[in-house]
Length: 143
Image (tube, rainbow, N blue to C red):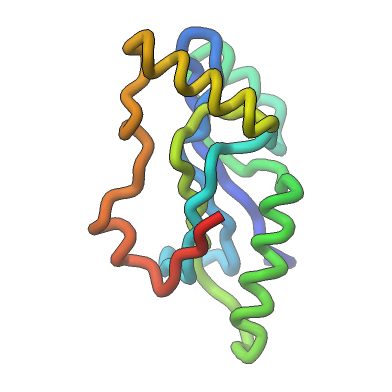
């Protein structure tokens, strides 16, 4: 594997896209967590394979390799700095969000999220990481 790759799981609900899972993978064999971050919401990244975009639209869900957005590119730099003394980085850096509604503009995302919660279309705690999950990571970056 030449460098880290990003992966995500998306669903479509009521015309909106939600990224329910995301991670950056170093090495191919390891599922070990090398850290995680908790951010506001997913940005506008897309699948590398356009067939997965079609699958998302047709089936309402898809998983696969995604393009790294500017935030992910910064996370890659950060993780590689943290682990610079290791010969080779292997594992997953997990990306968690306070809410999974995909939107590149924070203010719009917050307003849209609040509207969905107020209409009962989305539970405010639906996408939160559990404390048990948090304990599986060697460190957590809050953004």
